[in-house]
Length: 172
Image (cartoon, rainbow, N blue to C red; front, side, top):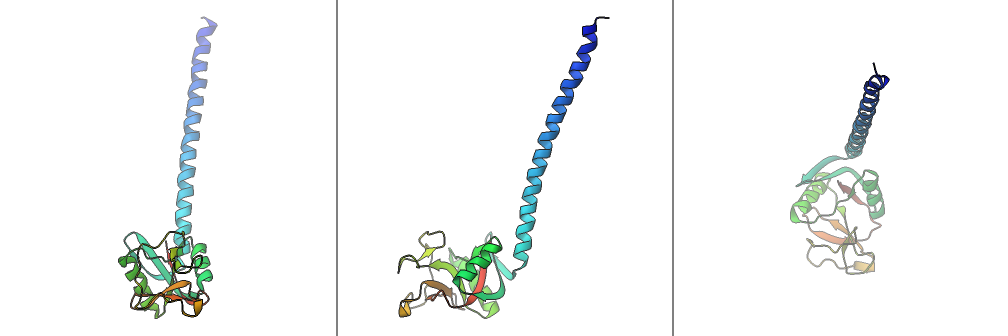
């Protein structure tokens, strides 16, 4: 028997094992990515569990746990939960935020302000607001210190000092 004939099956076996090892590495990589995504989802769910008495408008969930804070604390609290301070972009979202505020019997800050330019209200993303539901005579910048926005129990908005404490409502 020719010695080359005996080496051929051994070479094929090595190649097959190499291919199988590469396939396993690929599968492990895919599973690791899926695990990472699942861990991120679970982490987000656990963080939002801190907030109760929530609701949603469309695909956007809004949550509150009854705690209050000034505007900066509200932003930081929502950020720590991987969310943003609630920022209504339509009447359905505004209504959902209003319902949560009514449930807690409190006014709530929303993620709209004119801190950078007086009279130019923007979302936290620095995008100009496309939806508003101002109360009559608002915004009025009483005392020259009203740069943040709160939601009244009737769903209307009012400009307010960012240092006041209001219900924290986050969106996820």
